[in-house]
Image (tube, rainbow, N blue to C red; front, side, top):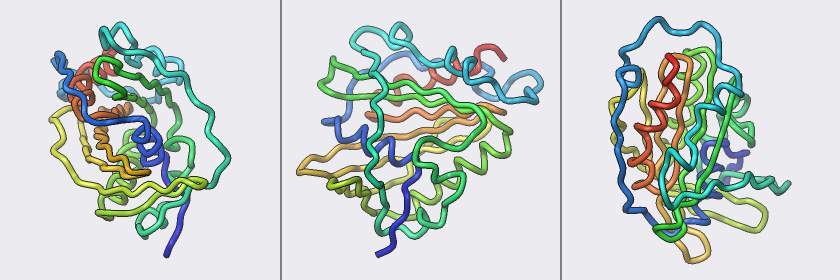
Length: 227
């Protein structure tokens, strides 16, 4: 079997999935600004700083009652490998960093939604040259979706993963969406990942499908608010 270091996009969802018990039924407003729909002024020519991105992340007050910010958990030094997906093995380089997608600027936050058990939602913001963002995220999504089933192993933990392409909302300049079904230790959970690129900003929201659908529009709006 072929092994590779997994991409951060898949890895983050793997460990998030281990803490989830199912989809959330929470819904909320998802109105989208004209900027998020692609109607905006001239595109900025340089990436935003990480501090600027951090300021544009969703907060507990943005999400509403029942959400708790999760502290970032240091990653263990266990090797993480992918088994059964040659396309992921071929990625390498700047997309297989093992810590985050290799773009110029980044910021991330994760929340637990206690109102529906142990559901979670996380947001990642990236900023870089628009072409690099487009090619980088497309390469990762295409590789993951090229393998309907594969396995991720971290230390002594093995997670079976099934992937399925999903319909992406008509936001920004480009969109990607997939559903990942995780099975490990007798537990099964589904994670939705949606990425929206608008000019030099990439918004990636992952977590329980209901939470992703509820907050994606709000995340895109806030990320592009200063355009």
